[in-house]
Image 1 (cartoon, rainbow, N blue to C red):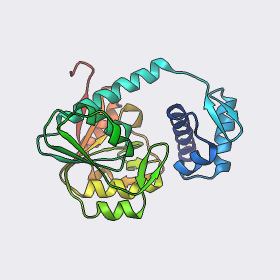
Image 2 (image 1 turned 120 degrees about the vertical axis):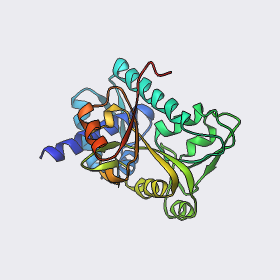
Image 3 (image 1 turned 90 degrees about the vertical axis):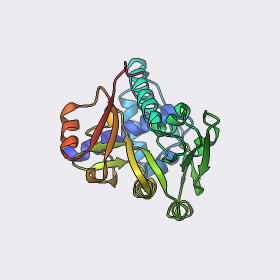
Image 4 (image 1 turned 135 degrees about the vertical axis):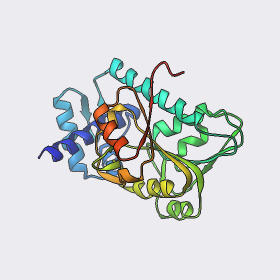
Length: 256
């Protein structure tokens, strides 16, 4: 029961995040993104409305609550993680980036030259970047609102591509389940990026994702060699990860 409640709570948290990012999302679109039934999403929206977190309307809902202080803190942490990750990109690197907002943001901070970014994130094509950064999209079926490229076409393309490094965001990461995601059709992509990185793989996760698990496993903790997180991550969970051989890069606010 405890595991089931954690899953439901995590899904409803994701619904809030998606509605905050894109208020125009309909219930059927949320259901497709989260790979659940429309009935489940409607039930989630009803509960969230009872908690006064959303206001339902025909076909969807909009966020009514605002948590500026908590949200700002998470935004700062994610920004620091992205800036630190960018320092690990060197001249001439070819890197993988998945659909994670955190991973995408690092493109803005890359200062190295002759860097090639291979990604299934359609938003990367218009994202701020330096002149020394080139973007290659994997192709595939474009899914909104994340503008993620998924499907067999994309997977076949990635099977023939290798990069020096991979910077992969996630929905949750723990010693017990490893790296997880809420989006089922992104699992194969994450796995290929991790397997086809010839040098290093960096998992990007702010403190809200450490010790938490989402629905679908992208890789076990034994495959995680580097984790980039912030100073608010639970130390007990980080220590367990270190014991499993994970090198933890913990970025603090005074780092830059």
